[in-house]
Length: 428
Image (cartoon, rainbow, N blue to C red; front, top):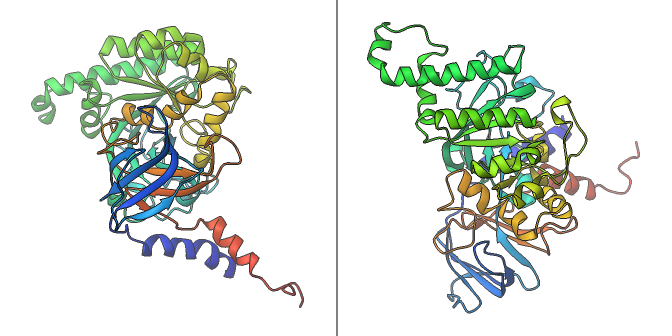
């Protein structure tokens, strides 16, 4: 019990007791600044006020009352955005009481399920992700044909409302062998998805008739149909988890037939249909760490996947092995390693940086506020000891909404505890 109180409970207390600090004027000076939207600025300054970036450049006047962060010899980038996580809704995958990512009381269609309402702001996994430069994440549900709605949150200390950036940011669907919808064949999954889209259109046209039971029976209930309306109207993207090339092609056809804004997630074999994805202007959320097939749908796994897609003109968003694809929430922090591997297997450094910053921000509908170091943007900024995509590089300063967050992770607390043990602690 003593170890638990020091490890978990102390960390939870820190998170709950640490409100978001009042924004201040901060100047990050002397670093190599990567704005994403322009050329790197050597010996640059990022001036932040009231949680927003005010100015970026080599000759920025720093106010006398500004707090200075010396970034000489360091690299400065926007905070990273991981677009496929279950952070805060899955704590320990093997413990069902800590898993809140799936609508277990629903069958195949859970479109009304808003996964973020079960998010735990005091999750012990937030701090490790943030300490590796991840400042914003997409929290996604999983399971079924339509898993539910996803939300974008900032990794600040505070309440759920403090963390929220955009909700919903997308509707999650799973097809192929990723769809656990209680049906046997791939084609049957697609038929059910088409039926849902048709019923949503019919519901939109006949809401009054539906309320007085004057319509045929629909495949989903009222709340799920209401939740699907923004999808069929093209206002909310449908994020489809699919790996096999033929499943991705089926999703492309479905999106074309119904006028849906499509995003492909996971996409192990997406490189095989890169030209079709590019022609349809469909972004792909994928990683670069796996080349060993995990199923028959991923026999074409290829670590050059991201690079091939990008060369074909696809908007590639790099994700960690931490959401729909695996549920390994503790790996949210590994996003910089995914980017590093993508570079090693053919992606340009600039494209990799964009794929974890401005790229996901734009795809998730927050590109006007996030993803680059430009005046007026939210000040999610990381100061790195060097190239962020090198394994040995550390995130030395992490600012979220203009405030540096230094809350220790549970690992930090345990390290501090055992470092301070007396030399004779093992003696009886």
